Amino acid sequence: DTGVSQDPRHKITKRGQNVTFRCDPISEHNRLYWYRQTLGQGPEFLTYFQNEAQLEKSRLLSDRFSAERPKGSFSTLEIQRTEQGDSAMYLCASSFGAVADTEAFFGQGTRLTVV
Amino acid sequence: AQSVTQPDIHITVSEGASLELRCNYSYGATPYLFWYVQSPGQGLQLLLKYFSGDTLVQGIKGFEAEFKRSQSSFNLRKPSVHWSDAAEYFCALLSGGYQKVTFGIGTKLQVIP
Image (cartoon, rainbow over all chains, first blue to last red; front, side, top):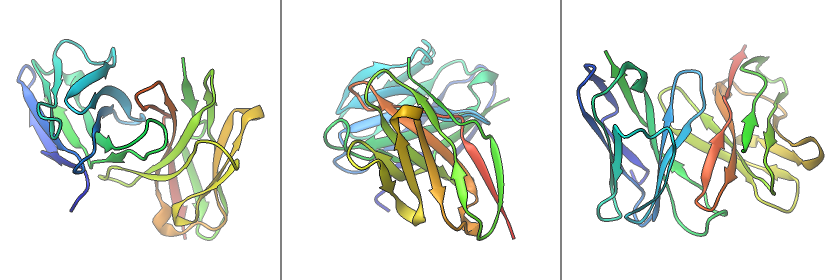
């Protein structure tokens, strides 16, 4: 499978714990995005990487959230001191090419449940 | 700020009937618009996109969408719906220099026999 891969697919954690998600984009895709989708809502943009550089962060990304893409390949999203409001589907997407004429391919997401 | 409105949260159609899903946008410049489909437990799949040119765009799975600048709309259509089209559909708008995409709330499509 050469699509965007996310791990784990599901995560249940207790409030206050830290969690880390991984995203493996399509090989050679230089752009990588994280989105959050809560029940009954569309995905909301969290952050964007071009290669290893994090170029944009949403105000949704509080200081408990941190994302990295150390070598410009896979990315991790860490949530510290999780809260029940963090329960959501976290989607990763990747793309390659000029800004406006390429498709972003989405992974299947990581569903986080904070209990 | 940009926004995308999908006024219909849930739509039910009979198999074989035509479909139109509504999408309105607000953006200060020329919009780049998308329709995505999401099946339960799955990621988002791009159905079609509009960047410029012909305002009627064709997509996968027999879908099409028409961009109407005067109405700030980008409605999705399909002449004959199949049971496998049951899913959630998201209209989205591209803005900014980094391909930041703003999604609508989604329209859940139910197909009945």
